[in-house]
Length: 428
Image (cartoon, rainbow, N blue to C red):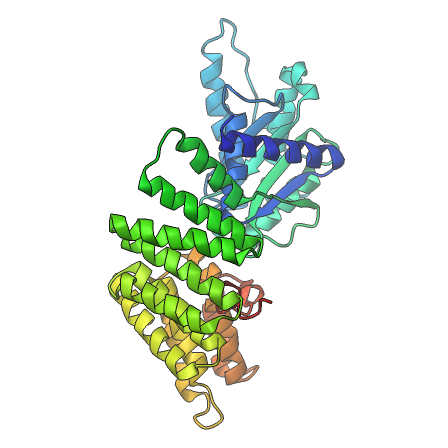
């Protein structure tokens, strides 16, 4: 069994336990980081394959959510299309009536797919003992409040149908849905370092290439450092630097040097950290993404050790590189940091506001999901505090953010960590 299959088996065990322990829950929400959510989605896809291990029925939908009055019908149309195609292979095809109206006072068409699945159960009694899990994963959501209303009405309409379950996956920190009162939430867990290590070992059996050796050293170092075993981690990283340099892999070499610098910062060896950062900057240069990242990381480190003037210089340089290569995310974060460094009791906040306004303009160039993950909301809330609650400027900014990010934009305005954990400023 390869490492990915092993992870899917772990997800299967966790999923079966969650369902068994919460038999009456109409909605299951899996929370995780991006890689964990991808794994959970892969699990659903696996249960749709011929190699599926479950007797239950798994369905996953990517249709965009455009209207609460028609979303349910788009799901049913897809089911009906597949069902009719399957029926063409039968001598006596079965007719599936999917247009039954649901009883009750509903403002969305969420009851429609429930009624359709209930009819399907009546056509095939063998399905009565099998659960149907409908995983919603829309590629876009026109209005989050409408989507939440649709899901809540599904939960209301499905009462008494304990074999029909709705499923949704959401980011652990950057939640897209929050007002789902009947949801059972659970955390999807996986050790990405162990998975990568096992995958590398599995994929490189019988090989001894230097590139594979580099990858293995990075994985070993990550494992050591995550356990606080810095000396062992440094040995692995130093070997990774040598291997990458021999192959002329500048990005790989800079990455290993960055990890070394961050590890030294974490254990308060600041002189050695400076040395490794400068090596990483020299290797990365100032015309690439890795170069922008190195300047930003070094600026964050300098900020963490109170070298604010130097930190600003590196954030400015990172912004220039990010603008040159078209990386809006780094450009925004560094502009925000320069803005914060511009606030003082001598100069006031006027200069900082200029940088914050630039952050908002940069954010408007991003896709919505990137905006929600960036510090755009935090910057806007900071600006509102400067403008004053209830001011004309504050109200205008609120409307602007609602249009750019969503009505819940203030809930996303969490204090950015300034890469503090990465650089080890708050670590023992």
